[in-house]
Image: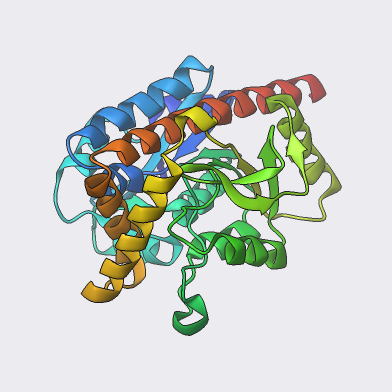
Length: 310
């Protein structure tokens, strides 16, 4: 009988044992979010960005049914280059493990696994959320409900602008997920610096974020996630007019081609890449690298705070 358990990369296992800062990273950006061969190069860049800021990267994924926290380079290469890698949300993990699948973890799955592993900070590009027309389709990302019950800090550039941003923020409020801007009171729109909505809270430094995480744990009255919305500088965002044209065209193509469910996001991201002649891909890469750097600095500040308290 097979024993199912989380496996750990050597560097991650040692860092967790020693109380050193660790940052969780998703693997869907490698297998589904970026085109080949850039996906593997960028995945390695993301990990190096975390290291350069003083933390240990823990890319999470499943290889042959083994759920790994801290993929090594061979495992990362496999998920980046082989066909048939499944996109795994939380509900899929047990089935994928039992059937020996190769799988890339979404924001929801990465958050849940990271928290189970004792990792408190996670860097991603943009969150999933409430899809447009959700009032009719009930299409809503599992990221939201997972963050409502998972004590993880997620550094992101807001939610993907292909979604209903306002409805997503309303759902996060209802679910009790805290959202703060990093040096901003405006919620970013992934490719865009400003997603069009105000935020109640803004934090100014990694140390302030670490204080919030310590307060959450100390008060022990709320176990939900903390979203740190980290906007791109205005001069690094996708041109807003190009963005709006591309999104309108992409949504029309979705309806024409009958694309629904988990296929929506990769379909639209691929459309953005094609229609913007690679400009959206360059923005996407800037987003995740900036978020990885900030997440690492938050993890370093949190580890330092814990060490002082001890």
